[in-house]
Amino acid sequence: MNRAGRWLAGLVCAASLCGAPAVAQAATPRPRLLVVAVPGLLWSDVASMPALAHYVSTAADADLSVRSQASTTRCADGLLTLSAGARTGGAGSACTVSSFAALARRDAGSGFTAHLGAFGQSLHNAGLRTAALDPAARLVIGDAHGQVDVVTTDVRGALSRADVVAAVVPSLYAASGPRRPAARHAADSAIRALLAAAPPAVAAAVVGASDAASGRSRLHVLALRGPSWQPGTLTSIRRASYVQLVDVAATLLHGIGVAPAATLGGRTAIASGPHPARIATLVDNDLHAWRAAQLSSPLRTVLWSTTMGLAVLWLAATRWPRLSGAARWSASLLAFAPVSTYLPQLVPWWRHGVAAYLVLLVSCTVALAVLAQLGSRRLRSASTALL
Image (cartoon, rainbow, N blue to C red; front, top):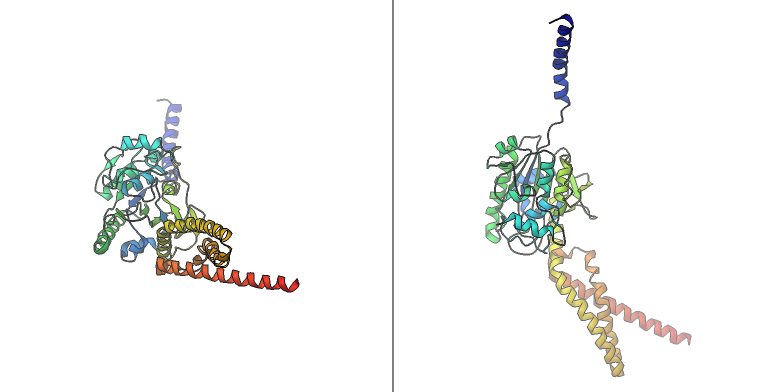
């Protein structure tokens, strides 16, 4: 080799030796995320789950509305709604499905245009590997074809071989009444083991991804911890500390710096407060929503009956003038009933049950009717005096 060749070789070697550390230092560490879906998990459960209570105290928290196509969301529908970032339905009450492809075709043509697997597809589009720790987790993390890169029960192994790992903890889903305390203990132990296996640099999300196997719809737990989620409260709608399940996937992707696929629905939840919401407040929000849902059907009946009653009283007063006084009083009661449905909201009636709301409703209606009648008498007296 001549002198020029030796100089060139030396420069190449020097550049490679000097430049290697710089390239390694500039490389961006790959994002890693652990998603723990706990169907049926309520904020009222957290006080009896010490590992989860400690986790949420250091996380960004919110009341999670899991509404899907149906008013009550069962396990598979919740997991698939999380996966699509859009409302799904009809997958059944179990936490697994028989045919992912058939559901994907049906939901893509539904009114909500839900593309199952959009969350997992976004991860694959970004070159990230996915892992499922159980069959139900495939519904959360699977791509548009329901596929994941790693299937294992070893969380440490999954986190070493994949960038985003999903697990489903089903202990609470079908547990109610006297079985609930034991189910809380089992779920808390499973969550503790999952979080303990994740290195500190791994972001983690605990998602109460569906309603219970029976009963009405409730608000559930959402807690996110990682570099993008500081302790505080999150919101994806106009009300602070409320997030919709359809917005969770977009929020998770944003948190690890991954662009969502074009098929993914939902919006990114944002911080709505610098401090975590008190668990008691989140529990109270759920109780309020639950009690209000119990009243929705009776209140619709009240409003319909009020309209019909006013029409009947008008006809009666027109046909039988002697009834006009009684009809006027009855009409006042009926006329103020719709307004009175809002007044109990000024006090926390939901903490005392539906009966407390009904007592307040009747009391407010009678009080407004009496005030209206007294005002009407004074007005008539004043008019008579002027004349």
